[in-house]
Image (cartoon, rainbow, N blue to C red; front, side, top):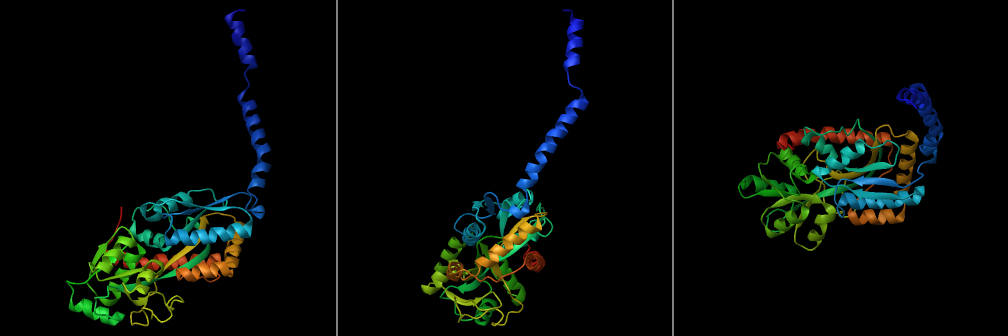
Length: 340
């Protein structure tokens, strides 16, 4: 057979572009029913759901996320698996979920830190309000203002007086620059005019250690980590940072009761999904979380954390997130803290 004959045979056997395109479209059409069936929001969830947490295991965000994941598993019949992705103040996890498929199978357990980060990180690559669909506020944990026992102050006003009289002798600790604990201290300075020095640490544990040793004089911290030291007599608690007293410490006044107004700071945690997640999926998740709040085991676990939770809608949680981003922006700017 001549080369020219081979070329003619090959050309005859080669499918045309039109045939290839038709076959491709036919194959895609055949798969459409399967895809739509798999993504049917009415049947959600049909497989395991990943709940991303932007902090290491063992922290308050992780603990609350695992409480909720366990209850969502029980309520919806599929596993809700916590996946810890710490780094960049939770920004790595937040950005990852913002770019995830909006089918309800990748969720983020968000914390107050993300609201602060919108201003703290000028180059942050997500918008907490536009890139996510709010599901439900999961819990609020009050912060508590604690001082070293040697500080001659038994209430907030006495601490302010002492700090103003001894500006070179008073400093406050935080779990890290830009954290909600740091920003609580900055809000305190903003409301009172104090000029105390901020000493950042890598986490609450080393900060509390130095506070108890007298290296720093006061600190705002999450109640779950600070309260055991208060009960042991190693720290003095002066006030909680929420507008209502904590059930875990009903005799401890609030910052507002102590004359610092307005002052409403809590470490809050909630569930959000990528923007565009079907409303039916969001509604199903929201209803399951609201049912969980009534369960005795959840109430008991929250009581140990000093956490509180109220039933809420996605719309209410969305409005809350918006208000938190707006509230923290001037505090971050006043502190002068920024992270590239």
